[in-house]
Length: 271
Image (cartoon, rainbow, N blue to C red):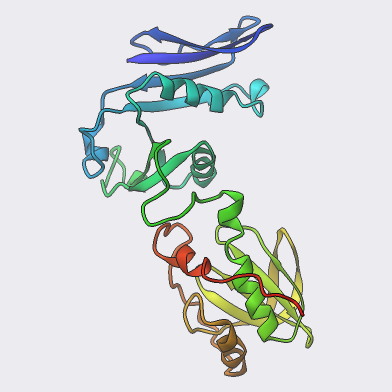
């Protein structure tokens, strides 16, 4: 097992590799540990059995950067350093509940592989399911781009713009992600809100703006699927909708075809 460390000095950051049994040796700056990571070629077959464990890979564990050095790209440099020293495939597993870490590794160029179906790992039910990733290869199968890139986050914009033309829209904007969503303000003082899990809902607009979740009074879900045709949205709205929230998909269902459908829409020309 190799423990790779990062050391920062007056000449800048530099990666170093050391062969040790213990994984907690770190690079130092002024006598203090700056960052540490453990690398190994040993595969946990119980986690990766369905994801090609026999493919030569380097496995990255316990990447930690001291808070004093956070925000300066040290973690990304360590990942690049590790990848350059492996057989071409860098893998990592992450707790499925740690969504902020999922996003971090996606930004670093990792591809989502899937959730482990292993139950009771390690020895307690609440920890069942690990988020498995491997890195720096191709986009996720079935997808034209990586999740959480600016292009991916903006994919619903053209679709929402077409819906805005089909209703009495005053203003509209896209909202935060997880799930991706958008809001259309209507002349009546009501609003339509779309998200990639439950489709459209409408209600009296209470609050919200770009970057802040919209709050509706008495929201009703229109139905018609997660992506009804723009011309159908005002028809569904007139039918009243339901208080029961449908769940057509999860925002984690990458590669299920939604992005390909969104890509068929274009920003309407204003004449």
